Image (cartoon, rainbow, N blue to C red; front, top):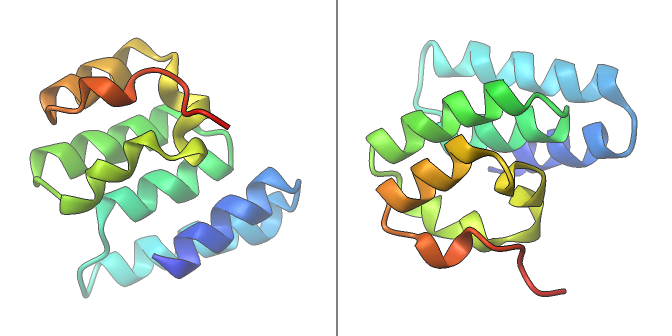
Length: 103
């Protein structure tokens, strides 16, 4: 979770190289041990990779990852207007999180 969040922050801060490196490490780790697809979603989102983020979010919903309840957090705001995000939120039973989180 923490490396994914670091990747998100680096991507949002414009350090795309570090964010990409972190995402690559997470993907390599996922080949031998469990990495939550929600963490991969966060890292993709930080890089502005909406499709990659939504693909991973879809896996998280499919796997019933408990942390999908975090979709109301502001870090998911860039995905919130995407129809697929809305569908996945509804599929997870989280319709309340489709609107932008209050600031």
